Length: 236
Image (tube, rainbow, N blue to C red; front, side, top):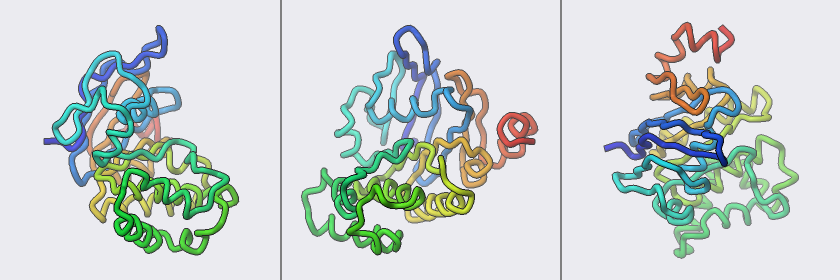
């Protein structure tokens, strides 16, 4: 049984069909990536999974249970969290306050404290910046904070939407190192990313979206080695 399974998902914006019956699976422990050009439905897919956009047809299963019609807060409570495109941290709050908001569903203060310490162990720069206003952090630090805030919900599945967007090449490398590190700690990853080369390099399974449909699928290595994919997405 897959940790996450999307079956024949269809989504409309008015009369425009954004997703045209896509299906894919995320197995527990994997890094799975969705790649494709801008406007092909990657972010729509993520937002529909977490309940922010309603689907017209199709089903979404998480741990074998259908979550298609569940509200977002109940989906998060089951261990599925998202780091949205553009980070969307609370700019006027401190780093520490942002992290605390990530744990808003947890009532056990000891668990919250333990998670804060785990985050600071994994992201030492955030510990150093814990009292700093989040909007004054660098782009890379803000991305680390967004990822850390999601980790405060103790997710089984972490969905990352364009985590490398707007970052320097050095910071892009750091973000992808962090993704593989989180995965090694037992967190399953669903990654939407325009940097196809980086995404395919770390992915166990990969899917290509084009015009609201999945056009190719395979392991990250298989798609990275495909001449068609190289020409379309890897500058080959």
